Amino acid sequence: MQRFAGTDRQVRGRLLDVLRGTTEPVEAAQLDAVWSDPVQRSRCLDSLLSDGLVVQTDDDRFALPS
Image 1 (cartoon, rainbow, N blue to C red):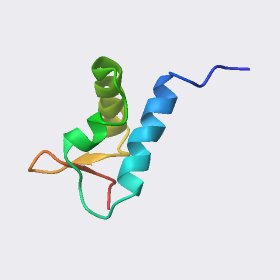
Image 2: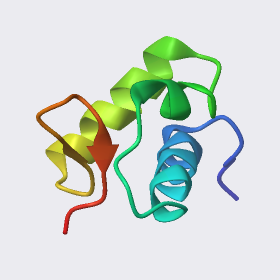
Image 3: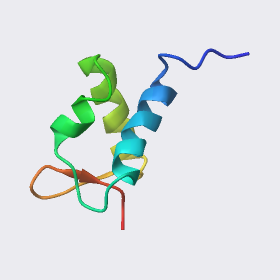
Image 4: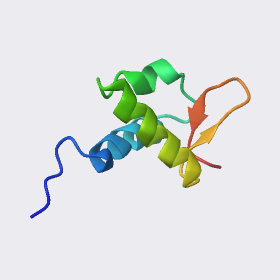
């Protein structure tokens, strides 16, 4: 069985949970609060953006694609 705790998959899930919980784009600080390792969190956010699962607004907030 593959370990889930601490994986990028877990971080991506937590970031998406924040975005699913709101109808408005969120500040980066709201995403920062869900994972303490800034390098891993940034890598996961970048991968979500690359995969098209998250979009960045012109004012540097983040949201689910419409």
